[in-house]
Image 1 (cartoon, one colour):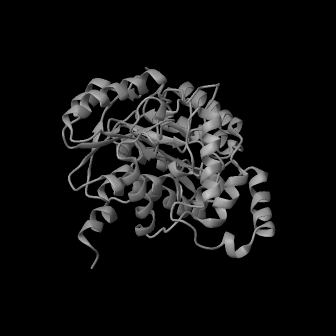
Image 2 (spheres, rainbow, N blue to C red):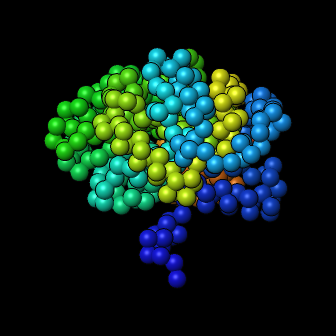
Image 3 (cartoon, rainbow, N blue to C red):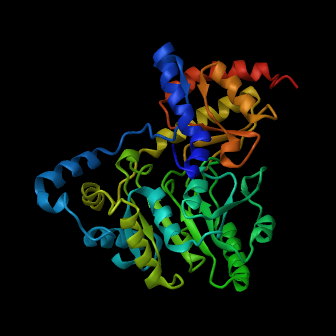
Length: 398
């Protein structure tokens, strides 16, 4: 009955969502306190109280026919201008409302940009490990994801492999920093190298290769680490952003797409992406949340709580013999599977009611992602269960 293109998606449903749903079933069976669910990147830190107050103020102070009505498919003009001015203050850019499209999160920003850019058969390069939905987003427009394996000692892109992966079919390259699932932040030197390679390789293509910066974790960094703003290094860069993580609003689905004036064929691209926002069925980003975001542009969530979680989990697992690098951002720990089959490792964890996601789902077999955006106490309670897993694999005994 279902469409052919959906059969593969049904058979290979998101490993993250599958584990999350299993977690709910286990919680009902054993009690939530006895299940250690680290599957979903669902922020545990509440939204800043100013966000809730902004919702109340918008509803009470603004015209209801305005705040609940249609607007330009790109979003409210004043909200887009406010977003542009905020970016200009923070990153030394020169955007205006014409460079911004308000979207239903970063995922929709990526989708409308790909809709505007891709022809069937076009290739989009992604640096593994990468967010698994990139495959679906690119496939929505009949493109193909080409994965570039990382240097697993650092989880930075292998730039030689990247250069070799570019072909005349390459239309775009995805970068996600801070990265989901590794937590690494790409330094300026890496971004400049990527830009240099794209400039050199674009000569073989009919048009410049596009760089897509997926940045929902931009504000979630630790120890003063800087996240460079990618448009400074390559003119044909589009930025996709979400307030899901920075303001703990994943269910509200609000973010934006930035397309700079310097972007190749800017006028047509921004127009096509705006139309894609409509024909996708979204029409526009949620109107109420756009009005709220305008009042909350300088806010962010309590990053210190995630840093505390990171330190406890990282030190705890390293002490048990697990191998991992220390994340600089986001709220994920990407650990090396002690089992050559990462699905076997996931199953061993699940026996102890630990729910994590296999690295294969992120195009990086042999690893697993642990989302530590959970209550601190859950990590404390989970460490003895992780110790049982470590003992099963003989970690710390070699």
